[in-house]
Image (cartoon, rainbow, N blue to C red; front, top):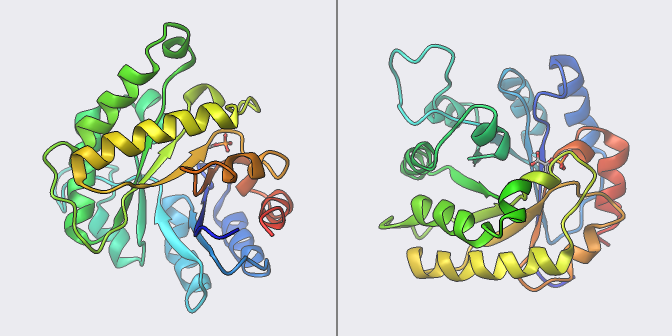
Length: 247
Ligand code: PEP
């Protein structure tokens, strides 16, 4: 495959400290294709230990969530500054679970993006419609609002690659993945809205029940350059099976 691929592993809150470090070690035993960028997004508490494990490897580290203020009275939050100190080069922003379980708004997402860009951390903007919004034919309206709020009047730094993950909420962790042609249709739209707003087309990842058996369908599409993977990334066998399908 000619295009540069991005494979981002979101371990969510699936693993404890020991299992996270063990899995990070297993990730290092996997052979990744040369054109493939891999980043691991472990739970916050495992980040410092995993930073040590990944040091000197090609694998990069990301935060699952960050707070926009650098310091202050924000009990329980972790700033992007701290993640940077720990060696994170990426951060997920607006993951569906943050938006829908923790009620993060498009405005919160925007503040986080601005804070991350200031620090030189690459935000991975996650967008997606719920099943209800899809049924009501509100897909474009919802996604455009998410993209506009994130990128409107934002001066995008030249040295940071914009990355957007299209993750239909109804496909996350359900085993019901989005049809590749439909994911491509949406990715094309995301690409045009982003280009209009920040002057460049982002790298677009698909996320939502990605597995070894369905990944090649997405990668065959013009606007999709990789995947944000949850469930299948949290076990060495399914992750290595997925990566094995990229050859
Ligand atoms: C995700 O958490 O971003 C995700 C896509 O999860 P899953 O692969 O389990 O659907």
